[in-house]
Image (tube, rainbow, N blue to C red; front, top):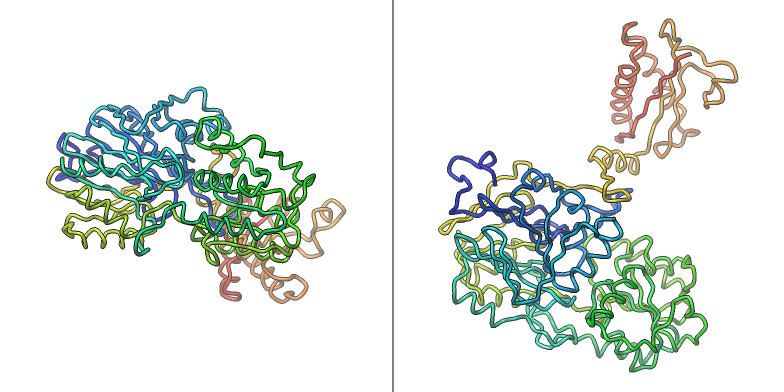
Amino acid sequence: MTNSTLNNNTENVDGSVSIIPLGGLGEFGLNMMVYETEDDLIVIDTGFMLPGSDMPGVDLIFPDIHYLVERQEKFRGILLTHGHEDHIGALAYVLRQLDVPVYGTQLTLAIASGRLREYGVLGKAQLNTISPGDTVELGDFTAEFIHVAHSIPDSVAIALRTPIGVIVHTGDFKFDMTPVDGKLTDIQRLARLGAEGVLMLISDSTNAERRGQIPSERSIYSTIDSIFQNTEQTLFLCTFSSSLHRIQQFIDLANKHRRLIAVTGRSLINNVRTATELGYLEVNPDYLIDARDASMFSPHEVMILSTGSQGEQRSALTLMALDNHPFLNVEPGDTVVISARIIPGNEKAIGHVVNHLLKRGAKIYHERNADVHVSGHGASEDLKLMINLLRPKFFTPMHGEYQNLVRHAELAESVGIPRENINVAEDGELIYLTADSCEVLGREGRSGRVFVDGKPEIGLDDIVLRDRIQLSEDGIVVPIIVLHSDTGDDKQPAGDDVSTIGLNTGEIEIISRGFVYMDESEALIEKAKEITRSVIANLSDEQKHETETVQDEVRGALRRFFSKQMQRTPLIFPVVMRV
């Protein structure tokens, strides 16, 4: 952190580390954490977040990285904990603006490479493959990568050795004693770090409010196996495209029950191909078929692997639910399994898909009516175990909504971390760490969000998003004002040229869409016309010749009028014409 953003008592010197979350503290997704000394800066994870229903026209949300751009001369590298999009999805956006090396495990970088290639930055990306146990020196930081179990292979926690002590950043983790790939969280290494001394732990809070310990990934095998046995027609299995341990179990069961496997959904196809080529998935090629050929086989011979577990509008499952998929259909008697956590905010979209699948006669299994999903994030006992293994002096929860962070802080206190050594922070706040103290300072404009409509380089300003929200909620009103080019007086429209733009007889025309039904609101519209005429009449001759002034005055007057009359404020877009 530069001295200009710190007070006189907290200057960034050799005896301190500044930790700034640019995303991931206060929401699910958008994970990006900055670690900074006087001379060097590194970032752990660069994730995106999917928009909610209150963000019309937004495709993706990225962290605002102006803080990094301003300090690019000391930016030493990006460290990735695993290959989920909420941790790597913004990498292409970052590398478009910053030329820094990236470090991650083989699978993580392979998945990230697909997105980098898509957005034209793979050629210039400095991708460095690491393995658990490796260390990387980046200025004042020495990063050690430690294997942890999660829902995707090749996940790591990162221990940062700094001039003031060791900071452990867990990434996403759980303690799975029977993982699908046989690779356990490296408890021994974590315990050794704890014995050596950990200054600070920053840990995953996703499931802090869940009691007990998260079951093994293998715990759902018997339930899915039973569904295979009892499904007489086509079986559709839907999960996150990066949940490779889950996908491996589906593939194994398809082999056991002699069903052919068809994969649909671009991200799922790419991830299955990549993971298979690298040896992270074991797939018998004799069982794989092109999804376009699925209809050539009897329904009981086919299993469809699909994306769309969160009800995404253009996902394969949503298209099938709406009978709009180009070559796959859900028929009466088919079975659909949605094997994924319902991310908060997506309940309505998922419910929409489920309703349409039920209308098509399908039988539906999801996490609320069957044991078809198990989380990749540790619950309260897992989180306490991590704290007890590392025994940190200071503790800060990350990854989750504020309620998750607070609950995790309570868990840390329950296992012996002094309350004064626990800090709950939010995006943009500065966590200022020394060997003897840790405090949370203000935001000072360090963080924000970039709303993307289309490609990553096309961002939406906040005002554009607010306009879209207002338009979707309250509609639009367009006052069309015709002024005489000489006098500025409002003029009765006449003639074919004027009528072709939609003006009715009268000097002011008002058009409304999504606000009121015009045919049943004549009194309201006439009053709005009178207000518009009055506004123009009260303008000086000079003001009448300034289009922006006319628009601003009319907009303000109508906004006040509609708000008072309707308790709604439509988007008002005055059009001024001169004849």
